[in-house]
Length: 70
Image (cartoon, rainbow, N blue to C red; front, side, top):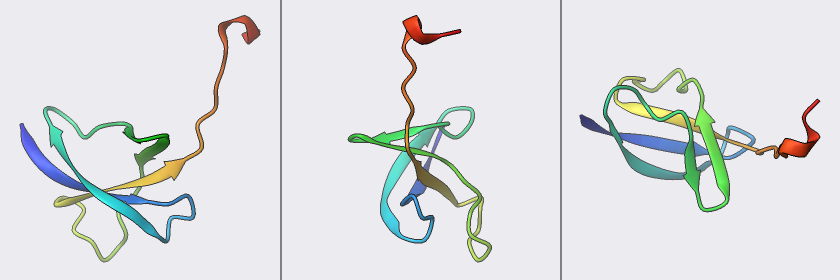
């Protein structure tokens, strides 16, 4: 296990919303939930060392109910 810093970008991918420390057991988290906001992995900006910092971009979640499946 190791700790890493994850930088959270807004939905426009230009503004940094925050930074959190994550614990990685095998692989980086696939989703980060911060309050009601959902963040998914994105490519690190070209000037960053992608091994030392993880980048996550905000996504709008969609809801699917069981009764609506086709």
